[in-house]
Length: 235
Length: 235
Picture 1 (cartoon, rainbow over the protein chains, first blue to last red):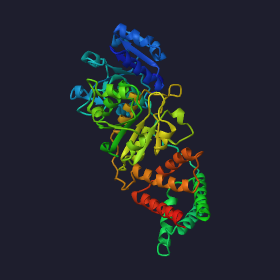
Picture 2 (picture 1 turned 60 degrees about the vertical axis):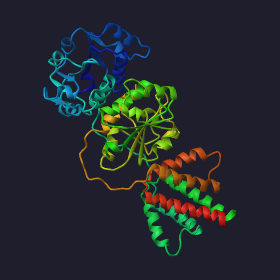
Picture 3 (picture 1 turned 45 degrees about the vertical axis):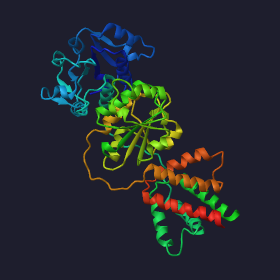
Picture 4 (picture 1 turned 135 degrees about the horizontal axis):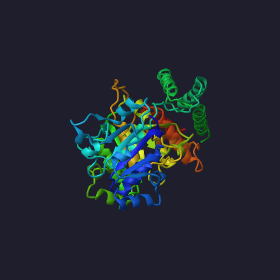
């Protein structure tokens, strides 16, 4: 399944803000192909002529029927509230869909119904499968723009990558030099005593080693300690 | 990481539709805890008094500062466009975050900036890490309500359950109290000056937040600082 093979279809959308939001989300995730079925003309014109309309909108296909809109696709996925579909259809989650079809070369259509009524049974009859975003049972119905955003996000994810944390870790010797300066200060401040110095030294060393310090961090620590020493000696 | 331990924070939101959409998405995914920092009063009142306002909104905490809003959390995640952050911070995706923290018992705050400017550098200094939804380079900036919806969706997906890692992380408010004592000492030692105090404060806050401190560690730090203060005053 590749992004260039994914067509998003809005059936009878009613709210120009939602149409705009759906187009925006598509652009955010690099999707470009939108079709609109039987839009309410004033709504559609308002959405397309908005000053900030995305090119996704101005280039959208406008179709009379869902059958026409999906004619060039090989897999059609209808979306609906999970409550509405319970027991009637096999319901996929977005993640199921990605898992099952990632390695195929389907030309996929993802179909969203109107804000008020969703897809009709006739619409769903044009779909191979039905997909539902798993939502809370006491508040299952999502805003159209947000539902489109989640589907675009999920369908365009790559395999999980681990975050790269840029960090030049300080060498242990650097940390030890910082620790020795810290111990001098704490001795001078009588935080360390002959009774606790040995155990406290180990405790502080352990904590510093586990702070993921960079060389710059150690330099900062040493600068601050040097200044505290100066204050001890000069006032 | 459990849903009941997840607080969503909107900083200076400007658009009542976005506030309502964020609250709606939270309800869709079973999240209930919302805090709002320094909202524009007319906007906020309009959002809360809307006929279809979610209870998430009417029960939201309204705070003056981000520091107050995150004080009871142990892990604070700021959100931003990936383009804005490139090269400056380690940037997590929502999925990275879930993978890394699924097995911890953090009290997580997820912070979103205003629609126009996002989070400021001062705001980000209060965050342990920064997260960005991976978007297309030519259209990186997402609508606030849609970004919130995607994060709520991703963070509440079922995760493979693994053993909970026991760790008593210090709350951000404890760390902040330690930071303020540290700043007092560094001011007294003339390590801080009017010229560098603001940037140094943010730098030190960031470093402390990322040291994985426990409550005991913070108590140790405060004890040492108290003793240094004593030495400043008494010799």
